[in-house]
Image (cartoon, rainbow, N blue to C red; front, side, top):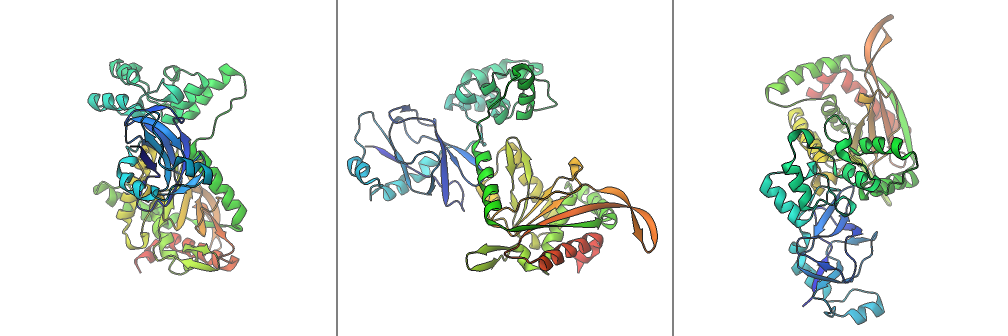
Length: 433
């Protein structure tokens, strides 16, 4: 009897998913536990294993189509086996009526093992890695499309420490595509995709075409959607970081005693959640013929990862202490960079902060993350001469860049929110009131 494969629910809030790639064609043999397809959700991709051994009899949903959780995607079974209702299905172009019930019964097993985005390994390679205690993200794959096979894990385990090269999954795939030996790349720590591109370009002396990863495709789609549908306006404001710097020094020392590192990002998250109390529209979404004011302030922090950008969010920031915000944020950042984020961590955001200050930026215009109303850009803190009560003094200054959806916030509302953020930053003791 054939086994229906349905769109797995990879998180509590997941409603739809996109098949970014089928790893098998109709008629191909499939081993139980073998990666059958790659499913892309909102900025996250998951490798989904085959729940059974057999043959991929029929693919009902092509690559690139967004389908709801539980929808029938394909049938697995024995070679030559008839797919239930296949004739009627092909004639009408629809899924048989009995499919949802069967899909529901098979849903738990179809989910399979979730691997970090971009990492692909054969079942035998994963088994060997578990037995040897090896992190697969450190192994470079030699199989098709950079897939890690057993001999890669065994070679990594046998190699002396000095020859072990750690490469990100995206870097390993780029190296396979470009024919670059990652062991020849001198990198400070883990080899990243940019290191591979640098190594490839001088030698190749030619243009290099890099296929878009599922993550990059989703980023491109969402940014294009934002530009096409959200009439956004940017607002810049100078902020004196003198008091905030002193405040951070004190709370940073106290946080260190408790094993928590407190950064400006964590304090600004707390400040933005407080400013929302005065301007609730900054924490809302445009919803057709209405504006949806969100009860919780779920603040996302943009995190650069190899091959793209992820924005995990801390839920209900307005109810959390600064220590709790710092702890949860750093946990999410670590998981984002190690490819272990849960889908729930990526969904439900209502406000975003992106910080490029470490690169020395003085001003930039971030793109609103739909369906949010605002995004706050944080720039470098630099010492500048400023006039204070008729006297020129040197102060640590920064520019905060707010981009807001003009359908929701008029100029006055957006400026009022940013002014409140500046007021709290320059007088952090106001957070106690």
